[in-house]
Image (cartoon, rainbow, N blue to C red; front, side, top):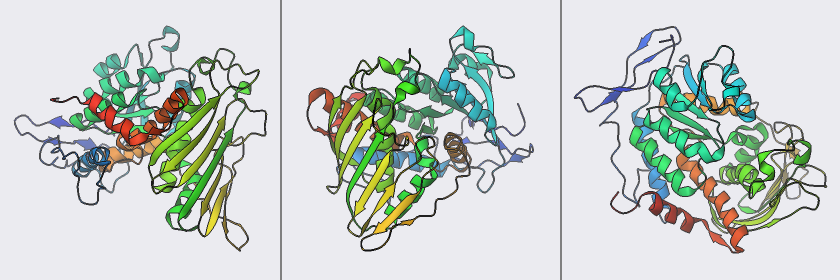
Length: 430
């Protein structure tokens, strides 16, 4: 086994406990920590939790978050050290997957152990073994985690197989194509005692971090409203045979999920309801709606007016979109450069004062590389990553709620969707 590899935990025979034997990059064996009372944490009651966890009508989801947090606190290792190597098997070698492979290769303290893709033409990569399936790769390659960069419809199957094989998982958004599948994966991860994380890379954008911090520190007072507009002419980017031209709700499913996740992260509030309308664009190559207008109601009655368009004739925005976050004491404006998500200042305008630019933190890693480092940190320390599946399932719920609203022309209650999906994922008696 290569030196410096983060080895997967193995159970002690007859002990009922697991430990995490790890080696630092120099090969020094590290003394493992006891895993507590077995790999599986005690189940929390539906509306219960651990101290500090929110309770109330969302107790079911919060209880899931609490279970992940309990597991993270119990299985932390390598605290205070940052030299261990995370070995990754990547599933998926399409256009986006090839880009991901470059990110993994260049990431510090991360090693691309193998690749998996069923297409014969992709199974020739210099210097890295390529397998027909993730199962075949995991049967032969020692690794700590699996990166799922396959088409969305396969995310559930690939992630589940990887978790059941004892690996941590970082999956491209969406976590799954339906909520029941997402909750099933969360349950499998809990049972396996492994981290399941979604690559919501937009959260690691420097200007967004500045905006989020300003909101959290009360820089504009209590929130009043939010407006977000994202306009791109993707006809200049996508090839003529791009799959998004034929998929239903391409903008919402492939783009809005980023913005909905950012809204939750920036405000610390969940989306209660969504009312949306899709629209066609003249002379557009999209078979279905490439544009959407939506009104999201956040907890506490804060409205979010959201506009998105992938076939615009208007001036384009950045991929992050143009943001206006209004509070009782001022507002925040974020206008990014259209060609680079990492460029663009955040302006703070307090009522009666001149706008000023906020200091933007300099990211240590590029956005996708940051998600890899977040997973690596979780494996090393046991701390739950920011974009864990238990958190991200609510971003997915808002996205699918938006789709349902467009299709049914009605306001969708997000909590009702989540409750129904949990019942479907875990029927009575399971």
